[in-house]
Structures are given as C-alpha cells and as structure tokens.
Length: 278
Length: 313
Image 1 (cartoon, rainbow over the protein chains, first blue to last red):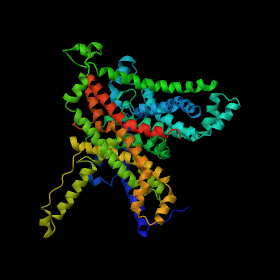
Image 2: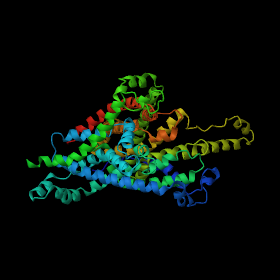
Image 3: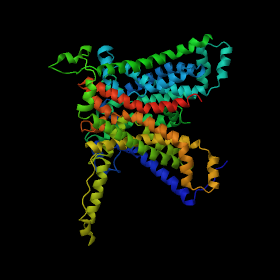
Image 4: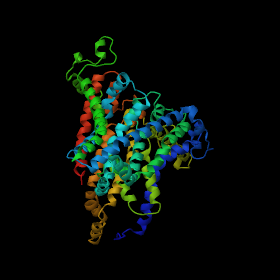
C-alpha cells in the first residue's frame, strides 16, 4: 500500500535540503581532517590558507619519519585480525550449540555473557596490569592485546552469530544429522555457507571494534604492541605546530575503518542492540 | 540423547574464557579494596605488597567516600557528561531519523555521511575536535571568532554608524581547555560520534512502523504532531530505551576523550579518577572501582532484563 503523500511543495524541497545540510555538517569534521592533511604544517594554522592552499602529499610521505606510522598500523592490523579470528573460532561453535541445541540455561548464559561487557574497564585496571606485568609477564605483547580484544568482543560476536543462526531453519541442520554428517561437517558445510553473510558482517564489526578500542590497547602496552589508538593518544597536544601531519596520520588511522563501516551499517544495529531492535 | 554433551562442550571455551576474564580481575579488585595497598610508601614498606595482614576492612571505601577530595565531583561529573550526551543524542537522533526516513534524491549518500562519525576511533575524535576545531586560537573556533571581530572592526570605518559599531565589544573565543568547558568539549565530541548510532537504530525501527495505522490516522484527520505523539513515539519507546541504556554503559566508562582533552585540568569522571588513584593508592582505586561496577550494574540490570525478555521469540 502506498503511503498517502501529504508533503507540500515546500516540504518536498525543504526537508531533503535540510537533511543534506545536516549530513554535511556531521561529516564536516572528517572532511576537515582530510582537507587539512594536504596542507603543510605551516599553512595549516594560517587563516589566509583556510580554504585555498597548495596541496601537498608531504605529510603522508613523511608519516614514517614523523610518527613511525607503519609500525603502529601493522600492530593494529595484526591484533585486530587475530582477535577477530580467535573470537570467531571460539564464538561460532558456541553460537551454533546455543541456537540449535538450546538448553534451559542457554538464555541465562547469553545474558550473563552480555553482562561481562558491562564491567567498567577502569575497575580492573590495576589487577590487569599486575597480572600481565608481574605474574604472567605478557605485558606489552601482541599476544596479550589479541586475547584482551577477543574477550572484550566475544559477547557481541556470540550474540550476533546467535541471532543470525536462529534464522536458519532447524530442519536443514537436522537433515544433515540424519545423513550422518559430523558436527564439524555441519558447521563447515551447512551452517557457514548458509550464514555466510552473517558471519562476515559479524567479523567485520568485530574488526572495527578491535581497531577503535582505546582503553586496554593504551593501558596494557608501552611500545612493542602499541596500536594506532596509542599513537594518536600520544600526540594529543601538538600545540598547533603539527596540524598538517597530525591530520594525515589521523586520516590514515581512521580512513580504512570508516570505509569498512559504510558496508556494515545495517549489521551495526544488530550487533549493538543484541537483536533487541529489528 | 547422546548429543547433549557435545553442545555443552562447544560452549565451554567461550564460557570458561569469559568466566576467567570476569572473575579473576574483579576478584583481585575486590580483595585489594579491603587491604592497605600503595605502590610507594617509604615509611610503611609493608603496605607496598598485597597481603592479608594489611587488612583494612571498609577503610578504603570510607576514604573514597568521605576523604578523597574528588570522588563526589567525579561521580557528579560522570553523570553530568552521560546525561547530557544522552539527551542530545536522543533528540538529535530522533529528529534526524525522521528526516532521513523519507525518500529523496541522494538519500543513500546522506546516510553514509551521517553514519561516518561513529567509525572514527575515539582517540582521533578527541584529538581532531580539541585541536583542529575547538582550539581558541588555531582551531576553527578561534579563526571564526577572529573573523567576526575583524569584520566588526571593518564596520568601524562606516560613516555615522561606525561610531555605533565601535562600541561593540570584541568577542572572546571560548577556551575548551578549562575544567568545566572541557567537559562541554567531551560532550560535544561524543555526541557527534554517537548521534549516528541513535539515528541508525531509530531509522531501523521507523521502517517497521505500521504504515496502514498511520494512513488511517491521516484519513481520520489527525495532525502530524498528534501522529508523531500518539503513534511514532510509542513505537519508538523501546528503541529509545535501548539507545539510552547502551550509551549509558559505554559513556560511564568514557576514558580516551577525557584523557586527551583534559589531562590534568581537573575535569574528571569516575574511570579517570580510578586511573589517578592507580598511580599509587591501589586500595582506594579498587574501592572506587567497586563503586563504578555498582553504578554500571544499576543501568545494566534494566538493559539485560529488556534484552533477555525478547531473546527467545
């Protein structure tokens, strides 16, 4: 049924223009960061070069010298990738079991998993430092960052997978069982191909959250395993001297993730509301 | 049935990992909160290692509640920041979701532009806003104010009216690095980042709104406002509650933005205060940490109830 169109002529122009205007305002800070990244540090703070300037790539070319960008970027890629992989390896079987063989406790377990996400990180800051530094001696290692990122996101990963798996008819899995397919075979040959889209968007979202994490990656590393969050955090107050190069390194840090994010905006709702908003 | 154990086995790694992740550090925090434990103390070196012989009972809690000078300020400030962000994001989110929830040319691009801030990492968000936008001299804030001042100064040369304009004061740009104003800066940047989240959720929910009901209301002559008030708002009640609760949980533990914007200028929330305690007084940090857990749980219980309720349907 078509919606009755009540929009006046004025509204037909006004509301879209307003929507566009607000969207541009919201995007402006990102645009400004990218824009400034093509100015030299000297030009970036001169009002006369606010909009007109000679664009330069020097900030990007000098990113390694200025900030050692690639070391942090590679750390981010390594930790986020492995944390996401690990979360899927642990999460897929768990979500599979919960959606196809639920027990009386499944609901409680799921809710409990979510509750671990609500523990304020600051409350366990010292114990985590103490454990990893003095006791396990894994402070500032990729291994530690991977484990922590995985654990932070595991509840969301399991929840998302659970909501996707639940949409698959149980009969298909049952049919596989009748044919004598092993559990591993069921997951590999039936479940994953059917829920491929769901698994992929879960992975994508998990990767984004890992990349942007800014508490543990900053607090549990010093140099070896530091990620881009730590790099940016360490350059928080450039006193205006380095706006150009700071913009370039920031653009390089968020660019890939913002673009990835565009592809999974729909899944974001599911991932962050735990299926409570459809 | 034989396939009872296998499902359980498949869940075990996830459950065990999360159990360890939750219980071990939290148990240590609980333990440290009941003992005297400081990292540096020359007069009482025995306090620098955790031990049951330094038992202090509820002493750390008492200290945090009544003697630590910033605790209540930090709690108050945490709540101020969280509530401000919530009000702003919900109102902006509702308005924008309604605006984008109609078809117009370029709607897809508008959505992409609107959602982008959510994917910017918090550290970049804070550095970008506090330096390039809000800085009172070099940021757009300072440049804009200076531009207005220069323009007004230009008007001074106007015949007759010039005398009037020269009585206008020069505007001072707001500095966002003082205690109170840097809290505003944090609110602005987090609102910018999280409004897209609210928009996305409200939009998803608006799409499932019952159109025929709306049409009936239009035919009955209901005004746009009364349709919004009586149909849309009740439909959105649940998503609004979810947005409020999820954001509360995230923003109660806001850290990177505060650290970057206001390190050392007095603007602090509870996680930041715990971080400060952690540099020496672990007992107090742990007691404050337990308070943070309690605060988060008050919010979490409501959320979990709501999520749990429609879990199996």
